[in-house]
Image (tube, rainbow, N blue to C red):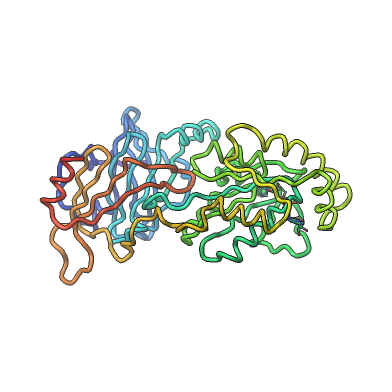
Length: 402
Ligand SMILES: Nc1nc2c(ncn2[C@@H]2O[C@H](COP(=O)(O)OP(=O)(O)O)[C@@H](O)[C@H]2O)c(=O)[nH]1
Ligand SMILES: Nc1ncnc2c1ncn2[C@@H]1O[C@H](COP(=O)(O)OP(=O)(O)O)[C@@H](O)[C@H]1O
């Protein structure tokens, strides 16, 4: 690529790095060494527009390469800092960003990346966004066609519109009369969807009743970004794939009271041809068997009387308790200081913003605890703990004790 090897490196920090303010130069680009590779993040596109691009320098061969990048990358800010974690991911802190948008991870050799390297046959890296606290777990709802999944989900979304958000799947099946593109499904061409699956845009996908269905990473992220708890209506194959993914969800299987009742509901819904009804009923037998697979579903609910099943669903989701109890207190108005230095001990990172800017309503010291992370690419990295600290002395004592 005709460029020199990067001169500036983020080493494994164990004491304060110098206060970095010079965002005009290096601040926009960081270089982190992992094994023989140096990951250079940031820089500017043509026309000097800031970017969060990634390129890799191989120290052995002296060759630069541009990896396939999965996931949503952060919006460029006034520079960023990079800290290596676990030798398999780089924590990125966006300068001058609100806390909830400040923390990102570039995964470079996590198990997910190793798998994607094999599938895609190229070098892959993936972004995931750090989320403070554990957040509420997404909910996967499965069950045979006609059992009432859609009806139960609609009731939940109607009663708790600000709590839940629906993961809008992609499908190659034709829309039903009342279905709206982008609301019920993203109706799509098979060839387009196959390509997007190959490009790693889907969390899971499966062939169901002769059509392709899939959950895009974007669909789940859109709900999480809106601060809502994501509901996925997917088949048993999809549930199995999500179970094996880093998405830490609750899995609920909905059963009919009897096969005859399932058949009746499916026919009375009147949305399928006789041939399609027959196919769905044949598949229902296998789905009902698979629903009982040990370890796949956390809860099985029988949808006999609708109101009773809905009540049980709400109880299962703990909706009588405070649903968001696991969230950390809001620090929404705080920002990662523009100029800051970083020190790291194990998985604890101290962000020191020097002296406070005049009138700045934000603390200058933050402790970020990344020791209990869950999830990651594709999607979100949860379990990040962020503390605003009053004084440097306190934080140094604290870090010693940790
Ligand atoms: N794996 C997977 N299954 C999906 C997805 N979206 C919907 N499904 C499942 O596909 C099946 C058929 O859905 P649909 O055509 O809407 O028919 P319905 O279940 O009779 O309403 C159902 O079991 C859904 O749960 C998805 O994104 N991934
Ligand atoms: N508990 C229930 N008792 C009777 N009919 C039901 C019940 N739950 C759902 N239905 C009806 O059964 C049909 C199938 O429900 P739907 O929510 O579309 O199923 P799914 O999304 O699982 O395919 C719909 O016409 C719905 O009104």
